[in-house]
Length: 271
Ligand code: KIV
View 1 (cartoon, protein in one colour):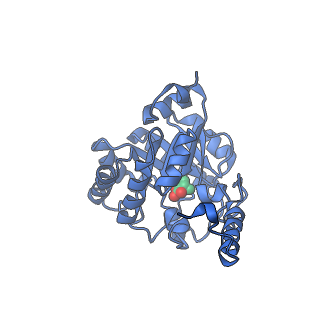
View 2 (spheres, rainbow, N blue to C red; view 1 turned 90 degrees about the vertical axis):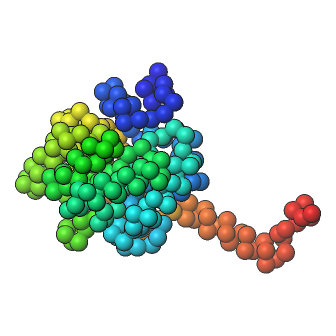
View 3 (cartoon, rainbow, N blue to C red; view 1 turned 180 degrees about the vertical axis):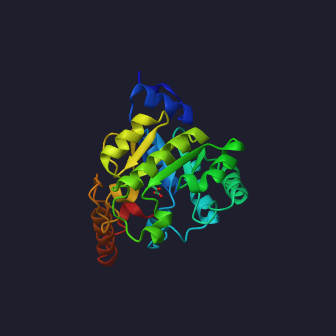
């Protein structure tokens, strides 16, 4: 039996075992109770309460505006819908960079107020003190390298990262440092597939890719993107498993027609 099927609850330890046995890890985002329940009951391994909530839930252009209180609201809702998956929560922009004490306070709030299993932070060497301090409190940390959307104003563009040798070298160093410091897993976003495969082969912790090719230990997508709720976003790496935008719009139009033409409610739909 696979590691994933043999356990009642997915933990950081289980993910490590999955990597050792060559079992791929499936991760998606969720931001609310109803979606989280469906994902968990479908047997997803990891649910990420991503700060992409800032885009897909709140309608902002970037992930920067979302607050710690917003993330706690989303994460607590998700946790109430989950029995089995590991729930990881993004620390939002401005709550951990440059001040490791504040980072610890933010991470502790997430763990205490949501019941999640781990936090995720973007960056390598420049945030290592924050990572160390959070880990010292016994809170599992997932790293995130490559395209780190909280730094979008520094990058100035959402193009593929680490294509140049120097940035690729820095990314490898950061990955090794995050592993050495004690991170339990790593997200690599939008980097060349060969580089992602190399990193996954170098470190013992699971590496989850998004737009990073098939050579990582698992994959993550934003659930609204893979279900086709968000039609405007269509990068090359995205596979759409459904076209929910069209389905939901069609259902809403049918409801409007029924109401206006007095077809709803019918005799059986009343008291
Ligand atoms: O916020 C998010 O959804 C993420 C994933 C894209 C990895 O960080």
